[in-house]
Image (cartoon, rainbow, N blue to C red; front, side, top):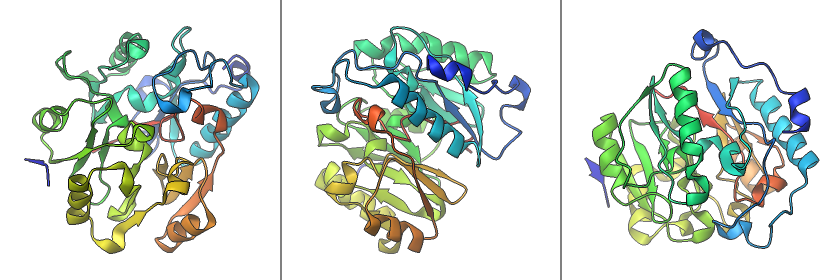
Length: 295
């Protein structure tokens, strides 16, 4: 039941893996999209305000390549082609939600991103995924708002800004897994993955103030105190929770020394990979990636 309590990057881009190797050559496969057409061309979240046409193309490519290269040491990297006039397609976390060989594609709230949907559908279809039906009148933004717990059979689902309140119950029916519905209340943290990151072993890195009181209580009821790593606002604004958990490593834009120490104490190795250009669009390491291996 649903619980309620790159232009330059073209020279450095790796060859896409063969389709038949997509899910078998590595324990995890990460989908990314080169930032060939990335820019701030509109405003759909608070981070974009005042940033119109204010990105450094060369720096964005270097930062994206640094993240890709760091991840490639621990997982296979698959690539979705960039598309002109779709600058945010670089944020592959929002392409959909994967479980096994099935995917639920995103149904974007913002008209500026709705053009990505046909390209996401084409990529997943071409790579052998079963595309599950989703009602087009219920907005859902994929793994930006739905994150599998790493210690229990549970799907954390955020709503309040981009994804509809009906999403948790519908995901439960489509995927057959228990969901925990979390209401987001701070527009700076408009997707769940900007303020919550499930870590291996059932740990949870999150920013409590991004959630309403009922959602905070739900998190506390499902995750024991010793497994909860609560970030403060300073770290949250560095998008410390917009992190990628791979092979005992946590890849993130930045974090204070205190938070890095807490992660190490829990057995994780923080890997800082600066992503200032993508932060201008409201995205960090997690936004730029999508896990394609989800049990």
